[in-house]
Image 1 (cartoon, helix red, strand yellow):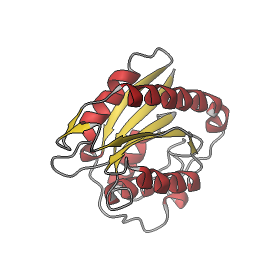
Image 2 (tube, one colour):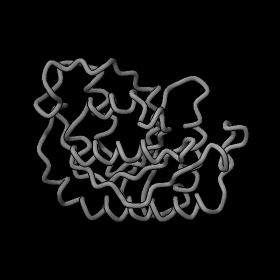
Image 3 (cartoon, one colour):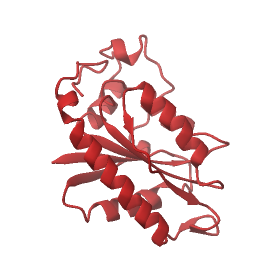
Amino acid sequence: MIRVGIIIGSTRPNRNGPQVARWVHEQASRRDDAAFEVIDLRDHPLPHLDEAVPPMFGPSANQHTRDWAERIAPFDGFVIVTPDYNGGMPGVLKNAIDHACSEWTNKAVGFVSYGVSGGARAVAQLRTVCSALGMADVSRPVELSLFTDFENNTVFVPGERPAATLTTMLDQVVAWSTALAPLRAGSLVGASGVRS
């Protein structure tokens, strides 16, 4: 069965990410075509990228990098839950992405973003980064406004529109993850020494 990781892309205190990720997981878990699991970056503290060589040339000498790579390697696709910080993705999310290479390649990725403008600019950055890693980013993001989808900018109250968009995005992530399986089966061992 296809496995999809739901990554919480913020680690700051009082973040909104966990409640959004819970909603994504609750909706996704009703499906019978894939298994979904939440991955919280707080559970995987990584220093600013400290690799002596780029991850694509590994294997890494650092245990924290190997642990992170082993955590994400088994998944066939991802949903990244991200806020928009000053027009972009959180630094901690970019850092986590940069700590791996082949573990991302030939996997589908969808986005659930939130912010004053729905997080669209963070998603635009993520599309560029994920594309460079050989990921297939699906076309339909879920963009949540702090003004209309949250009470007092802090309590997530999803409506019908985001739920419908989420269903479409998950359909795409599962379908693309399935379609890319032959490419993943032939992937080379990357920086972490883990086959993607």
